[in-house]
Image (cartoon, rainbow, N blue to C red):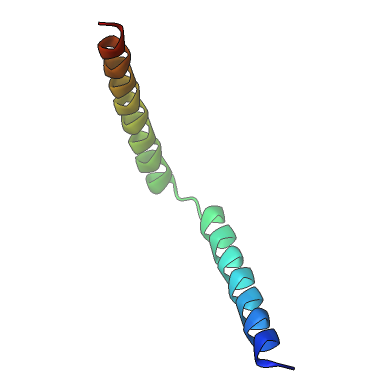
Length: 61
């Protein structure tokens, strides 16, 4: 096995491990954390909507 093949194999293993960790993290949903995350999403979507409205109003004026 050449050095390049070793590096490619190590990279593939690292990516597979990372994907497993991400999947495991997504499966761990706690009630408190999910409510907090949902609240943050609502706040950010409202903020984005207000910012978009401001851009639309400025472009029309």
